[in-house]
Length: 234
Image (tube, rainbow, N blue to C red):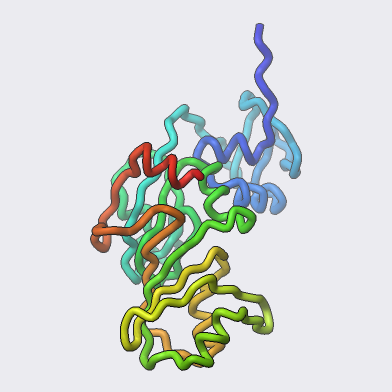
């Protein structure tokens, strides 16, 4: 009889659509996951035959193939699986019976490209800082940026809580710009604009890595092809 392989709990759950490894590690450290009635700890390994519970609920494991959807998120929609305030979420935009979760986040006022998946390993690769996956945004300001402001943005910024680095700033109109960065810090572009004193009117993400938003309309989604997945995984 073949012995089942032992794998780290966060990897086992990520491969089955319960979130990215990073998110699951936070849940394990916070005591939200139990294995056979005992609070899990970072480093624990499982075969899948254990009684694994998340927030007290026994998980249901289904063997499903990884899937990724590209979604054009409208402003006003939150980038979470569910919302305690009953606001519309990005998961509400996709018709699927699978357990999906967003890869990273766009804040509620930002529109554009976001990915939904059941593949925790892919989510890890796309969001972990060490992989430096580029994200491109279109932003519209109330007034044009001065050369000094652009120099400030591209030189790197340190505020009281964090540091930010923008890879590229391209002028596309009188008050419109394309920004490319590879970090994924919370409300990063909004905080950068506030730091340099620019009044941000709108913000839209148009690219993640090799994947372009393209002609996908607001509120619409599409399942990524295998060739798109292969490029994205690189």
